[in-house]
Image (cartoon, rainbow over all chains, first blue to last red):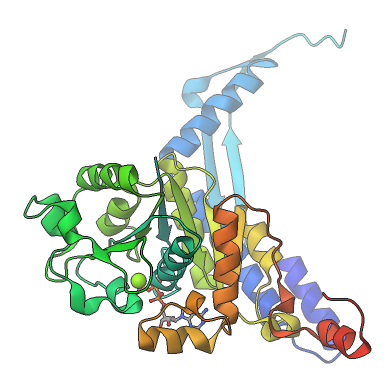
Length: 95
Length: 266
Ligand SMILES: Nc1ncnc2c1ncn2[C@@H]1O[C@H](COP(=O)(O)OP(=O)(O)OP(=O)(O)O)[C@@H](O)[C@H]1O
Ligand SMILES: [Mg+2]
């Protein structure tokens, strides 16, 4: 979250201080770990894909061959991007 | 049947060997039969930290290759009756041993000792894989720095993938005065990031350097703050509940104030 860093910077500028270096360390660590952890293993993504399929299938029929689940990383965020073609929605009753 | 613990870190130089030597000595002081295994083949160090470098005849590679029996290679500690060291080979490299051989070795050791501590080399290659192969549990050592914590995270991931769950964390070289200034990550910061159980916090301590110079682990000295922390960790390893004393380590401002004003301990 870039926002947190900016906010900290702002607060500190108001009080005429620099961001304590440990906050910088924590934020850098957080980001680098999201990247590190997101590139762990293909098994991780496969098992996520299977679990997603299980849950989503309760609500709709989906085409699992064309299902695409991936983590995309930009400079300061990692997003889970899923593209899952829907074949048919199930009838939903909240009984 | 004894317990086999591997001391590992990912990043080099964070205090694995220091930790192995101190915990081993301290476990022996509390009456356990302990074997220390230096798995850092090609870069042996534990012998020097223990002050046993002049007594080495055989090493770990000699044992797994069958050149000698395990008993012949185990060096008895100078001070503790029930403490032994199995030194690493200095002239071979990490590929001289396989994970299977390490498993066999640990199995044999666990029959003889209450605790087997394995000092792992830095890195995530074969040396690391050998060191963790025969272990029941891992102790991960880190320092309060970005690179060390990052590497610890990587190691935790690798251990999980190898089905070694819930490793224990030791944070080494903490400097309470820097934490208080906001210039060093705090215990909570690191636990939040790594999400593992904390086994202990060891302060930065000159006594570690002095005791390493002499080849006498710091736990033997009662004036060492780090030694005190290692003694606490030893009690935790034996199942006791011992509270972590974080910022009291070098006497925080409130600590000092309280002392001056004569309020109760801690
Ligand atoms: N708590 C401490 N206070 C002061 N110095 C320390 C502390 N812990 C370790 N050191 C020093 O840091 C250096 C590295 O420690 P050590 O050899 O135990 O690390 P290591 O993780 O085994 O390194 P390697 O990855 O090379 O095997 C040593 O010189 C040691 O004396
Ligand atoms: Mg070492």
